[in-house]
Figure 1 (tube, rainbow, N blue to C red):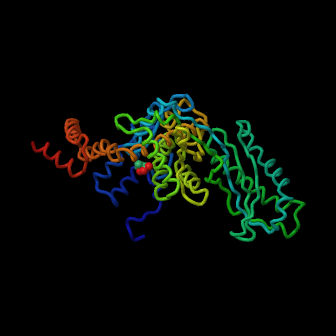
Figure 2 (cartoon, rainbow, N blue to C red):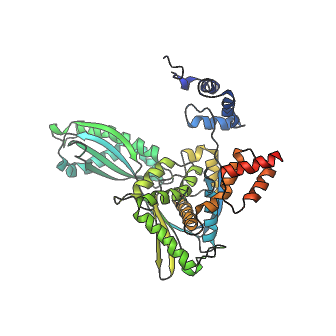
Figure 3 (cartoon, helix red, strand yellow):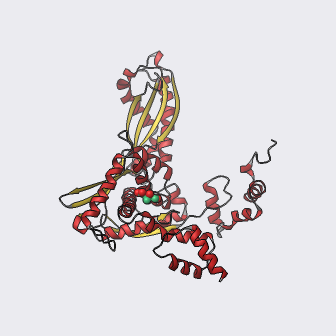
Length: 440
Ligand code: MEV
């Protein structure tokens, strides 16, 4: 190995050795020191964090914020949000307060089914599936009883098994599409364990099932894995009120005019994918922040959500707006395969705190709160976009970030904030003003 930047056995080095190696080959010495600056004081805690992943050379902190005044189905929540984008928590809080005064958010879980797939090749004819499936189901279920019993006691387990043929992959390609209930856990481990056991049993079935002819005994399991496409694990959240109540404090906007423009913005995102992606990104600002805070899997949620947004063949807005009989209704429907027990929800101490802040919700309850956070975020973004424009609200936080980049003191922060109040903030302008202050 001639290139010194290549290494074998990096994962076997101690953390100190890994940091040294990284610094020697890729960083300046002072940057190397930065790696240890965020270490947890508490060794046990650091051990917990180190065990989440391999090769952890540093902790990477993100702000853990709280958006209070979220009323969802009549219950008040302070919603924990982990996010780096400066305006998100402020926007969620403002939208939550706005709707608190108008009856709050409503949320309803439409379905909570998760899916897994066992992919295989088989030498039998597709028409034989209907006759063979019932006994096959009974067999795989019986053989995996020990794995599913505890989940069944919690109200979950294997729900349904279908046997699909997808000749577009190859003439002999099949899959068992298995639906699961996973109670309050996200269920990835449970689903994958059950599917792998099904795979083993499917091989046995091909070898010894008396109903199979000799030319039906060739079976090759390709893989077994959950599907992150969860179109039947869906929650709807909505807000509604008479249009006459849709006033925007201090904006001086007519409620009818505001509602009309707001609905226009949502309708554009229903029809135009370029706008829909940005619109949905705004929704995910709220959703992902709660997903992260509660130790859920944001990649799974993102993947499922965007597949859902394109389920009719065109990528569309996840939210819809209706104006009927002078009532304004704004709703969001999205898939959220979540857990409130197990996995990182239990292991990450702050995820545990976040769930405490939320009152230890069930997975269904958390789906509702998360959807409300997404809807609030969407409402806040569109409210700004169709009234003042987005930059006005962003300026305050943008300014604070620029000040941080110049290591501004508390006094410098106050003076600069006063100077730029109500004005467009630019990096260049702030630097010039700070330099002026520092030279004086
Ligand atoms: C920015 O993070 C999110 C927005 O672009 C969302 C939107 O345009 O609806 C403001």
